[in-house]
Image 1: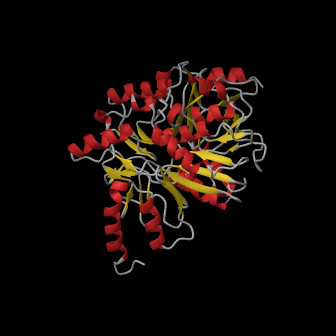
Image 2: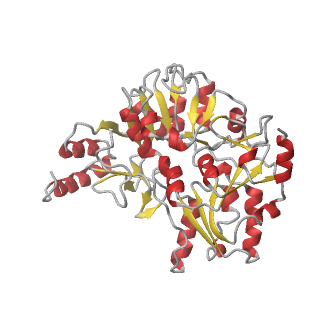
Image 3: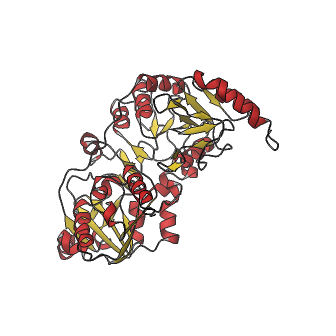
Length: 442
């Protein structure tokens, strides 16, 4: 079959492709590096020309291609963002809308693993747009940085428009689409956006030391994002035969693979392969993913499924928190009572790691926030519960680590106060006495 002829027959300019998007409808957008910059800029021109009535945007993490095009406050009468994750741009839009007494962002709470199912069952996508690598000789295009909800949603939408970019890595795994599945192509060869790496501080190094003893050789790891995971990656270089089954690939993880600490030899599934669902990093990392058969990118409803995670032994998940209260409830998504990020895949991996034989889940963060003025260990969390008290296992700060499993509510309070910053402990003790004495709490 002549795949090249089929490709050429569907090839358009960005402006022509943007005209294939209805003036009103539901539009799915690939997250982060998967968002197509040229197509979104062409669609923005239609918004400026008032050639758009109302577009409901469904996406997860918004990066520069989206934030620099459709996510602008003057467009919010026609553009309705429905993010599954809240970033800086969404928070900015909410702030501006609040000042005008307008709701302009419509947050979609969910576990990351559920997003493909939510799209399939509850959202009727008119169009899905994304970025892919150039076509291979078999007629396939790889979305190497992202499989997550991107690949499942691409197959569910009524129309699929892709932007072909030679800078998108070609990855192994289930992250490719065939030319026959795609309705429209455009071409735009531009470097992928790069995410800044958070520097490692002294507290981060101390936190890494606190949890290092919980990670044996041959463990299968999942890391969140930030300076603490980066510090932990740096501390794990002497470990042997680690495995990787993680939501996110970052430069720190890439370094751990390249030093030989991660071999994936002792995984029960995807053996010898490092599994991820999306990548966020720099050019060196994207180049590392390109045509690297040891790196497999799979959809999030596979990678983040707790029962898939649990098939490997000794799974250790490491994630962060905003607050943990004296009962063990965790807030990992709200700051000052306002949505700051999202659940993401944290709960998926907390549950999957604990279902794994000899596995464990760890939540780790600095003991304070806002330059030491606020304690992350609190009497009661504010906002929604990200992780329930029956799910949480290890909690760590620079002052220690505690396993909440097998502890009464009273013992949990004592243990958590012991790892709070010393300047907040007396206040927490007084609050604990009040809370534990309340009718109904034991």
